[in-house]
Image 1 (cartoon, rainbow, N blue to C red):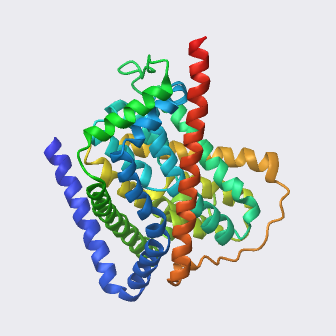
Image 2 (image 1 turned 90 degrees about the vertical axis):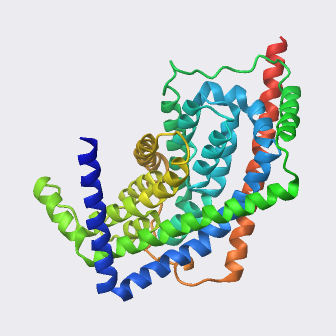
Image 3 (image 1 turned 135 degrees about the vertical axis):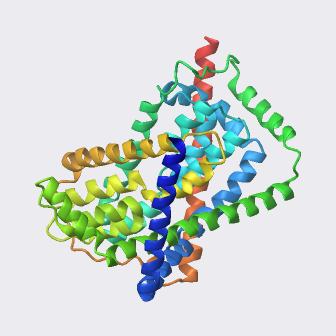
Length: 405
C-alpha cells in the first residue's frame, strides 16, 4: 500500500516537473522576468532583513543568551504558551526579522537539545511570523498606499500568532507539561545558566562568528532558491490560464460568482505571499475591509514558498511539518478575524486613497536602499532585544518578590 502511494506521488512530481519545464521552454521571457522579480525581492528585502539576524542569533545562542533569557522570561512563557522561557528568543527574533528566522531558531534549539520535541512543536506554531518591515513598508505604505492602516496589518498578525500559541499550549500537555524552575532567585539562576552555557560551548568568538556566517549564507541560498522558484511557478500558472480555469470550476461547484482576479490573488498568495498581496491590493471594485482581511490571511498563512523554506529546516529534526502547516492555516484565519474586528472597531472611517503600488524593491537594486534596510532591521532587532531583556528583568524581579513573600 505504501509503495503504491509512493509511486503515485512520484508520477505526480514527474508530471508537474515536466509541466514546469515545458512552460519554461515555451515562455522563456516571462519566466526570466518572474525569476528576476524573485531575485530582486530576495536581494533588496530578504538578504538585508534576515542575514544579519542569522549571524547574530548564532552568536547569542553560543554565548548562552538564550538560556539567560529563558530563565528571566520563564514566569510568563510557561503559563501562557506552556513553553520554557527559551521560546522568547525565537519569538522576538521572528517578530523583528520575519519569515523564516523563527522556524530556523526553533529547529536549531531542538537540534542542540535545548528544548524537547513537544515544546519545540508548540513553539513552532507561534514563532513563525512576518516582520514589521514587510507589513509596514511593503504592504501598508507600498501596496495599499496608506501608512495610517499599518496597525490594521501589524496588530492582527501578531494577535493571531499569540492566539495560535495559546491554542497549541494544550498540544501533548498530558505527555509533557513544562514546570517552572524551583529556584526562587531567578536573576542569580539566570546568570548562572549564562556562564554554564558558555562553558559548554568550546568554540571561541571567532569560530562562532564564522559558523554564523556559513550557516547564514547556506540558509539565505535556500530561502532565495524557493523565492525564485515560486515566482516562476506563479507566472507559469498565470500563463497557462490555470487561475481562470479554477475560478470557473469554483463558480460551477459553489455559486459564489467569484471574480477571476480575486481567485488569482488568493491562489497566488497561497503559493507566494508577496505576489499574492500585490494582486489583492490591485483589485478594483472591492472594499478596504475585503483587502485587509484577505491580505492578513495571506500573511498569516505565509504561502507555500515560506512553508518550503520552513520545511527545509524542520526536515532536519524530529518535528512534524504537517502540524506546522496546520498552525499557519490557523494563524491566517485568526489574523483575518482580528483584522475584521479591528477594522469595525477603529478603522472603518479612515479615508482610503487610490491604489498606487510603488515598492521599488521589485524593480531595481539600490545600494543606499539596501543599506537603509539593514540599518532599520538591525535597529528593530536591537530595540526588541533590549525591550525583551528589560521586560525579563522586571518579570523576574516581581516574581522574586512574590516568591520571597
